[in-house]
Length: 375
Length: 152
Image 1 (cartoon, rainbow over the protein chains, first blue to last red):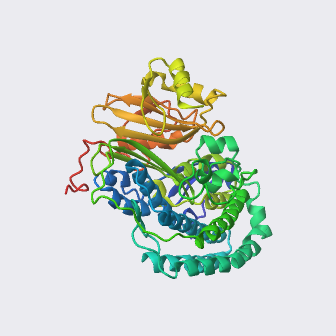
Image 2 (cartoon, each protein chain N blue to C red):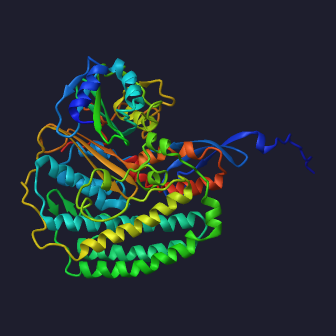
Image 3 (tube, chains in turn red, cyan):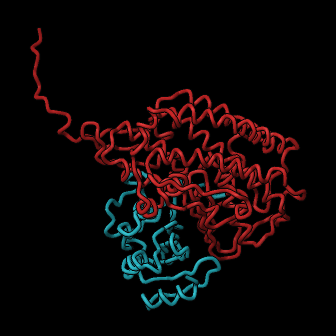
């Protein structure tokens, strides 16, 4: 019989050790690796390792024409694909000083907001699942499907639409579009109450999120945290309000700001934002003017030599596109300031001292889309 | 603060800076030695209050590499662009502005990774997307990769 060896036992609380969360971990919602340094259950620090799906989109853009680049932007933040397309379209239109038909601007604003709702629905269901409520996942996906059906009917695809083109839209909206959108708003106004009943009012969820991962306003600005996560800290960072594009200076909606900056406030920001988006859509859906769905553009789009910058409010924050053009049909340099990249940088700062289970809640509330970080 | 006043202030702070015409943002080209000092002044001053670095990019202009800082003030609502040019492509370096705008930490790592510019006083300057030991910096114009880049 073998002799039992008693190894010296060290108390686990005394020793700092590292674990890898990811690259394949359900809470990172993609291929992101966090090297977490722990003492017991307490997070001491963490280092994100990105780049697992780095495709070199910026390098590819240098070889592509502007209409081709639209298709690459879909693949960054695939949950706000329309809004990413919008950024590049606006940039090209601004550089060429093209007047886009009124109809296009209306449709773009409505579709952007639908996209924002769809994105927040998916965030809501995955956040619920992170917190251990699987019901959320089914409810959220069920309602998101309604928006994807509208998208499919009008634009021919569900996720990566590439519907906007420089100067207008790829095709006109489907005759059913307005009716379907109104049906959806009516439907979702009822259903969003369920969301509150299931998760927002849930005491377990509230206990796990209130006071966790607090981000101050100063830090939010310094780290460049934008979108609902930044607004939860009181940072008034909505590009739709600060630098209005499309119809956002004409429609009535509120930029809701939080004060606490904790995980629960970040959660509430997105719940409010879904309602605000519905409000915007309701104001526009009956007033889409008749007209062309695209301005007349030259077959080959060449931007005059110079620098251009365009910002839009994507579902997760501010998306910036910076282009240096040398006057040819491809950009000399194209840089995407993606919201998730800056939002990720704050994770180490706000998760120090929390328990490892709370790290999942914080990560969920910052709502990462990894392809947007890696580009 | 409008462009004219801003121009006066910045040129007062850094007489060597060069003003560049740009439709969208007032743009200043700085000598790289004065970047950190000016940046600290911009963020700290109550009138200027450039507290939000909303974009930080690098551009390879072949004869030099340009680092572009897009800045905004969340209180005063004005924006501007600072540029620093690095002509030494092999060992070029710029002072890090991480201590002023924390978001620069990741963006500077990205520039180091893809363009090969070093940032002095950066707390953790490693490649961010590509693996350690990757050969070259892909966003440079002279980067060659026979396997992955197909010329049409």
